[in-house]
Length: 240
Image (cartoon, rainbow, N blue to C red; front, side, top):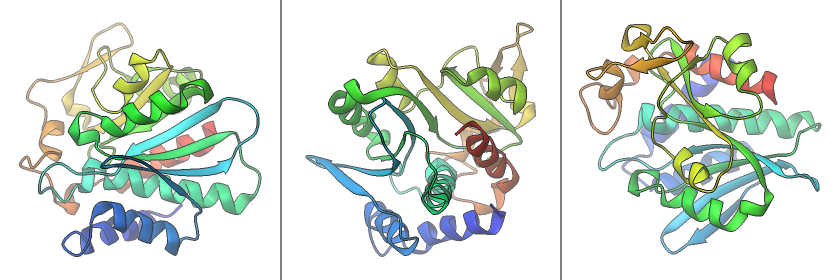
């Protein structure tokens, strides 16, 4: 994957922000890439699901939320992660040899995680575990909350930093159902505190927090470190 491909997808979200909904833009991009998907609707919640390879085994869910907070453009939160997963889905489908994975773009994460709540409630019997991505575009370090079967590979083969305390996102819906889940985010090295026990914490006043929810650095594509996004993609490709 080249950085420019992700940038193009991110810029598409930016370009259409005032013309159509985030839901419509995501479907437009998936159609442009000829990625097959289906929509699961629960009231005003629209989860978009891509099934590149499914058999009789339980699913590994790879996911990211696509909705935005308030009037935010949502570049770091969460267009970068969505763009990365679109590229990943396209590559899986083009290769023709795919694992038992379901890629889910969750709606309403910014409204109490309602999309992931509906998804886990309706698919709990078919889910093995989940790997989720949120706010991965700012900083130079990938950090992980939670644990799943491949967490050791993430930590030692891809230099991901393990957080002592989980950051809240769509991972909460999986935790509540007892489903193993890892949330991957990104942060500047200067925002992390080494706890001395192989875990890290995010500083209370970290710049990391200013890159989403209409904070100081939100909505600035110039702050995005696409090399970090690419690191997340390379890790995902090697894991699955």
